Image 1 (tube, rainbow, N blue to C red):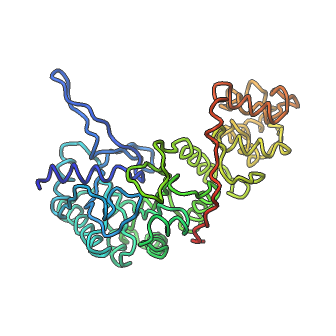
Image 2: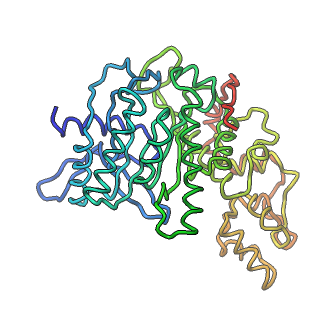
Image 3: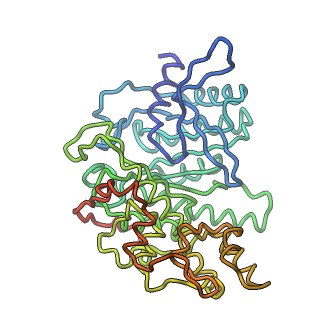
Length: 421
């Protein structure tokens, strides 16, 4: 098998991993144009400073000893298989880089022979890139669950970011869809990466030339919709990961039915709207001072409302807190108001030092009054019409969404929370 064929197989196998963010498109070159685009191989991610960077997104191999029923690369699935050599992978990356196609590498892998063997192959590839080719670009690498801690540590010395995919958010779903994987296989490398990051930060505070270890932090991915896990359980897990594992990001990947199995849902549509709501709720956990218990207060279904963004949904379920007077509410409470973001809340607090904030001034500050008007007063006046939860909800959703209430159908099976924390 030549390198081009391997690239096609292994780049295609990597496209379902959303831990780096986007995929490509297909467009043929034209006689009077410059360049073309391919579905596989190159994706985009965002650096910590906000830069968009192009990455070669590829698997080291799609051979796998595991038979996770949701995975296209599972051992029993009849798909073309390929494996690169460390030399091929390093050379491929460098040649793409020299042609200015990419600025970095996103490397994942199936598990060939054993976790340790696969991790050793990945380390050898990274070693060639960093030490032989002197490649200084961005590298995001997946740690293989079950690999020895010393191998995880070696890989982290070469990588900018590492991730260990949890995939399934509860022990019940792990047992149902990936029975060969154990909780300890996933948690152990995450703990080791966290501890190494902390240790290296302490070393660098004393010694400037202390070796780096995963300076971009670690992340993970959760598959949404393949099991009956509730949004509360999923976000509870994410909250624990942020607090205890110091993760940079949790990525939510809507389940895509690419293989058939009795334990998998029979659906032709992925729950992209649910994925979107989870990202919004995740944002509230990280930047708006919410915790999972308060976010789901008075929500016995334990699922996010698909019709409303999570903050508006929370505000409607806790209407007794509102309306807030924007000229008196503290910063933390301003953040709870739908339509007021982190930046606009800070501007309101600063503006109040110099005088009373007017309703017209809120718009200039950047407040989205279409939502905020229902939950605030300004100089004692309420601008939201009727302070009634049903009418506010109808206004927020809008007539064009009335027919899509069926999207909010909730699963009934309460899965068991993965007891990581």
